[in-house]
Length: 240
Image (cartoon, rainbow, N blue to C red; front, side, top):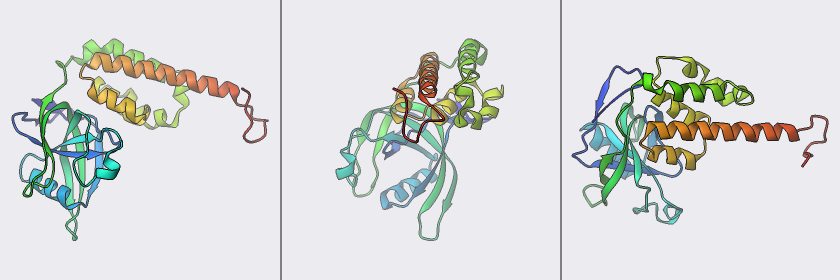
């Protein structure tokens, strides 16, 4: 399988015939096209970075399932089945052997089976399968994109700082619709449960429907909150 980067110019090959190192975190969801900065200091994950830098530079970013990780972090607490394959696009090895890396999301995947760490390989690894459905041509996604941009152009969503921060991306036709949805998911719809739900959804049309629905819901909530706000009321007083 191959995937394009944000510029659309570079194909990243993903070989699902081999196992991927798994890096689980709590509440941090990586999505395709997104960039994630990580500071790697644990011995097992330093070993993981060394391993992938010697091969294809790819890591499966996973999310812990439940709260068991708090008491069992040093072991192999449960993780959710859907992951994002990420490509290390920048790395720096520090004098203390820790790493700073930049990971770019490449594609959605699902864990088929997991291999727990052993004495030689300190980190978890897993066999994966892709979950993306067939890619749609951006011209076919016109109505989806137009619906989402219409929601964002209306008040009160248009006044959100998070929307203004990505205004250039929203207006750029150079950014594919699939990447645009990921930008909105991470910058505007910043609910971790929703982000994982969108990570697990392989159908771009369904993702578009979810994003548009959530934007509509957010707009209604902001409108309702604005009606309750009285600028002349004492601090902490609202009309209910």
